[in-house]
Structure formats: structure tokens, C-alpha cells
Length: 425
Ligand code: FAD
Image (cartoon, rainbow, N blue to C red; front, side):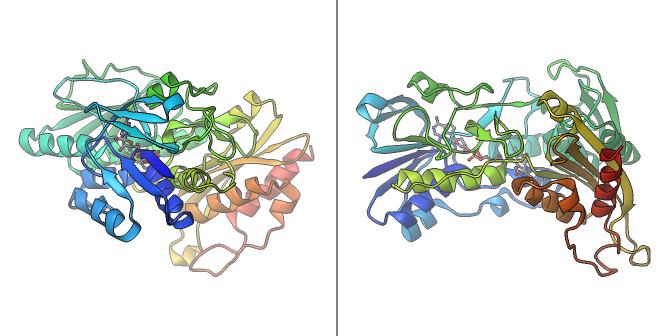
């Protein structure tokens, strides 16, 4: 049995490792087109900001670890350019043909637009970050324009501002972070402005012509599907690879995981494309297990995410009110502002939003903005969405309290009470 994995980061290496654990005898081969494997792209903004001192700190395991400890062969700088599934064969750019019994496609995503302009940068790969750092040190630009108000754009703006650049952020919609929540955008944009980032909402800027010492193009991603699509694998409605709950593509014996494929949304039951690192790891484990002959299923996603923007923690899970409406629910929303912990423990403010369906009273989503306490609140809601749970049940859950950590009436439960009142009217 030979399992070939394409992509040597989160999803690919989780798949390879899990397959090895379940099948000690299989031959497992990973092809990665870049120079590095197993690095956390999530840490790149902190490398840019200077909190992480070298790219090596972001590398979790080196190829030797996989070779020696897990008996997994790693081939870097090896791009798979074609798959001939009828012959169970992957073709490398070098022309080499590699036979497989099972294939795991974990090729990730890439920025939607390419650019060769010398002062336009992306923050997607290790190579992007190194090129950007080198430019910053060599050219010492004083101004930066960031195009795109998703989480990568906001992390990049934060990092460049922390390095002392004058930063302008353009976003072509009225709300940030792909969440149509004006209250959340107001808090996030307010914090960015306080830190000296000029935020231009509802303004389109062209990264190629923007007037600044450097430009970050953070205008979005697209999944790396072309090679597998050409081999006959079906794409879903989002344009990412369609997969079953077992992470199998429409080609029998070919699995996909991570940013290149769709996943079932736990609230709507529909297939969505929400590329995130934690999801990539979990999908990879399932794809690897099934490639090794198991029958495991991936539980789906709620789009749970958290990001730090100029010191503010911003998190969301499930559906916003607008998304819920588009999905055919009749949503009701409550937003409350409380404190993360007791005032005498310097509790900072914490804003929490909950969204529920009027008809079924089911909890549909949440967002939170504040400090460290945001994580616990959003994860609590993520668990409730997976249950799933109605607002009454949620409002009654037994959350922990002590003054250094929380408030006696947790803002999340205060918000749930408010939502109940709205549902009853
Ligand atoms: P990737 O990490 O993209 O890996 C795919 C690999 O496949 C790449 O190395 C690529 O070179 C290789 N490849 C592609 N095509 C081929 C081919 N044909 N042949 C061989 N190799 C190929 N997620 C979070 O959950 N939390 C965060 O805080 C967070 N922060 C982020 C910050 C930044 C700046 C970025 C860029 C991403 C962040 N993410 C975060 C997202 C997270 O990094 C990705 O979701 C995750 O890396 C996806 O893993 P993957 O294995 O699917 O794809």
C-alpha cells in the first residue's frame, strides 16, 4: 500500500502521520512544492511584527523527524503537476511519475491575484513573509497600504503599525472580517484608528497602483484545485473540492483535506469553504485515517475563529444575523457589553453577540470582542452549536466564576437572557 500526500503543511502532515499510526506497513510519501514543511503560517504576522524572531521558530517538525520517527518520506521542492487517476499516478514537474494506491490532496489555497510588482506583497507563505521582511529592512518604507479587511489584512496592518509605519487599510465593504456586523466593525475600526491605522471602509484600492512605500494585497484566497479537477474530481458550489464526510473526493481512493476543500457547516448542513488551520489539521487526520483503510468522519465546521487586531481579541462562530437570514432562518440578535472579569481585577470590556432562530429558538452563532476572555466565550458557543442547543438550554449552562477570571453574571449568559426576552416578544 502506497499513500501519496500532496502538500506538506497542516492538512498533509496530519494525514500522513495519522495514516502511519494506523498502518505501520504502508509506504507513505509526501510531496511539497516549497522548501519548508510543517510551519505555522498563523505565526507569520508575528514574525512580521517582530514577536517571533525567526521563521525557524514557526517550524514544528523538520523533514528528518518525519523520516526517522515516523518513517514518512518527505520530498520538498517537488510539485505535483498532474494526476492520472485511472493509472493511479501522480506526475511531478521534473517529469517523474509516482504510483499511488491512495492519494491525499492537501495542496491548500493561494492568493486570488498574482502580482510581480516589486512593492506589492502577500502574507500567505513562508517565502512571502521572508521577502517582505527583507524589503522592510532594505528599503525602510515609511508608509504602507493594506488592501483587504479580512483577518490577514488586519493582522498585517497591526504588525506594520507596530513596526512604526504609517498604515492605511482599504476594504471594499462597510464591515470588516467578513462578518456583516456593524457593531463589531465599529469596535475593531475604532481600535485600529486609536493605534494610528487609517481605516477606509467601502473603498476599493488597487494594490498595483496604491500610493505607499509598500502594499499588502490581502484581497482573498482561492483553493488549489486545478490539478485534481483536471483529473476529474468534482468541485463544490464554492469552487473548492467537494468531499464526502470521509473526506473522499468524487475520485475513489483520492481524499482531500484543508484549505483546498469544502466542509459541511454544522449549523446549516450546507457545504462551505472556510479555510482555517485548525480545520485543516482535523480534516487531515480524518483523510489520513480513511486513506489507511478506516471509516472515520469529519464532524464539520462552524467557522470558529479568533484574531488579535491591535491588541483586541475578535472572535466569531456560526452565523451572523445577515448570514442566518440568507440561509433561510428568521434570526434574532442580542449584543451586550459587559466585563471580562471583576472590575477590581481590571476587567476590560467584553462585547458579546448571540444570534438565534425565532422559530426553533436554536442558537445559530456568536461574535465577541474584548481581551483574553473572548476565547472562552466563543468556544462555549462553538460547543453549543455542535450540540445543537436552544437558547433556553444555553442560558442555563453552568459556567465557572471567580473574580480574577469572570464576572458573576457572565456576559455570555446575560446576552442569552436578553435574547430570550427578544424571542418572547
Ligand atoms: P497550506 O498550509 O496552504 O499547505 C499546502 C501546501 O501544499 C503548501 O505548502 C503548498 O506549497 C503545497 N502545494 C500546493 N500545491 C502543490 C502541488 N501541486 N504539489 C506539491 N505541493 C503543493 N488559521 C487559523 O486557524 N488560525 C490563525 O490564526 C491563522 N492565521 C493565519 C495567518 C496567516 C498569515 C495565514 C497565511 C494563514 C493563517 N491561518 C490561520 C490559516 C492556516 O494557515 C491555513 O488554514 C492552513 O495552513 C491550511 O493548511 P493546509 O495544509 O490546508 O494548506
